Image (tube, rainbow, N blue to C red; front, side, top):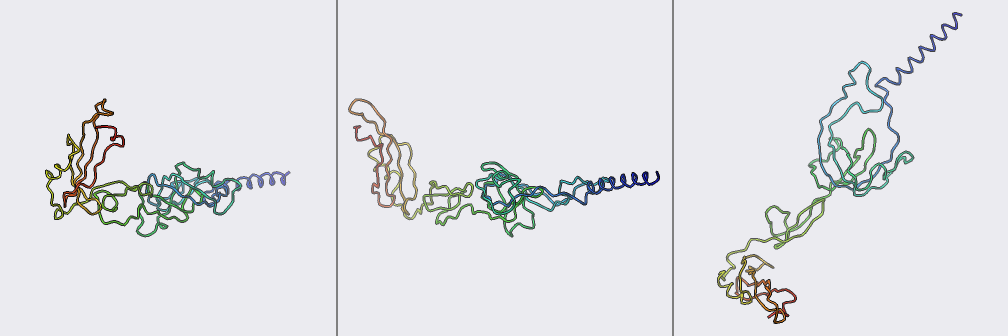
Length: 264
């Protein structure tokens, strides 16, 4: 009888020990295996968090077994996934496409000690790298894609420099070309605005005249309208632009609508 009682007590003791072993914060169970994936994406937002420890480490009953206890200093990104591919690892539980679906925003972090010297992070930057999933998605390694690489000889205010007459804006690591005026050397300008206007004989109503540089030459652009009859019947107003060389006074071009040959 005494042996049976002792066996029951021993069994209860073993069960309690097993429960304590499982729930003790020191023995945390790892997440299910997941693959390493390579992504290309666009940063939507960035947040930096200093290092900290979970408060449950100091509590009597410890921490749950499915969490990270010690959090180093990190950058957290919201990244729009543009492409994803498999690198290595287990895919029985989850694939790269499931873990990082295309065209979705994913939270991916990088530890501060893995940040390359001189790098800073901003929205709309392109970022590529290898991502693992263990207590959250994190970069094993990364590369920031340059926003724009444009050689130039003119610097329009507020834009990445481009050639004279053009500028380049950057979005998501891509360059988009537009047009912008470049400074005109007044030493090259020999014709006054009034003299340039006298050359715009195709324009009856002047709307705008501006001095700008085109192909390294100072040019007056004169815009306005001309009244005419379409097919000798319908009254129309033609939009006309006359360009005059600001150095020589010669007419460079006269631009009209393509159908202007039908109007007199």
